Image (cartoon, rainbow, N blue to C red; front, top):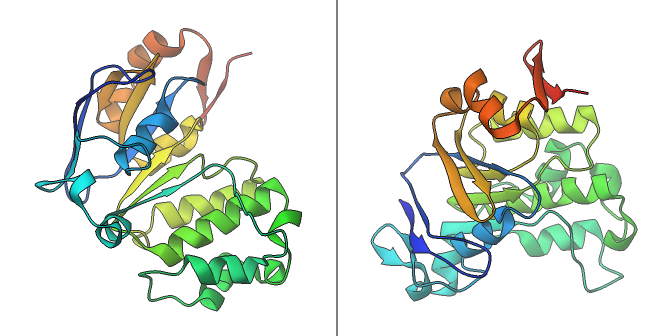
Length: 230
């Protein structure tokens, strides 16, 4: 159980949320709504005494207990050593996975990036390396912040396949991609101006009436794909 109890700060307003064992979540919302801020609070990157894992407050967990319990995967790869290769970065990321670094490179079909400097990777390649690092970390719950940003259709499909498989234990996915959110079928949390305005089942969120109340006429559904209504 992951719980946050009536948390507020400069961005978030009275956030209360509870996720049971085995529950996955999609976080949606406009730019600046507080999605990434909420993710950082949930995983302890932003201190709070309002977050609990099971019956234990997050801030009372040891570093090892935290890393086993939850992992935050940012939207952008940050590397401080300009000479660090992809393989070296991923080797440092390995914590609790039974997969080897080589196996993860093969699984994501990114063996060609093995010896490339992390600093020279494209934005799409960086996204794949972040996904690989999450596989090697293998926390009980992983928060993905925009995991399909900058990816081409083939790589986006690969990310979808991984997220919908059982290779990760539990996921929270922040995204702007409504089609991905719909296909994954997870519970939906929608944020606006730091507040939760919807928290419920996937099917209920994607009902036409609810979508219209959130997006007005800006979204339409075409053959099970949600697109901007231009």
